[in-house]
Amino acid sequence: MIQEIIVAVVVLFAVFVVVFKTYKYFKKKDMLSSCEGCSSNCQGCSVNDLIEELERKTKVKK
Image 1: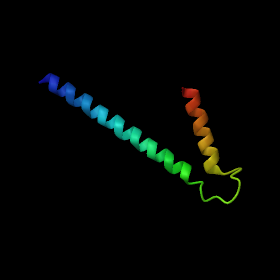
Image 2: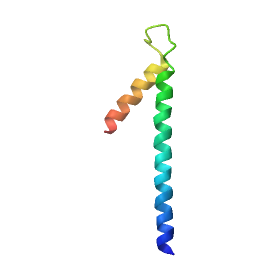
Image 3: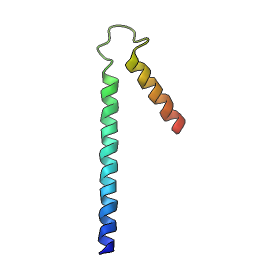
Image 4: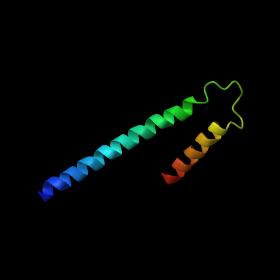
């Protein structure tokens, strides 16, 4: 009985991790594509600045 509960918890955790990582992957693609319609050189673009800040933070964490 306890073994089944432990297996269920582990499987649910694994499913949660997969769903969360998939969501983050597609969310990142959406952020990058939001600057495609820009007619300027994107200097000072808030979306571009946010992307650069996120990239710096992820490099620091690694």
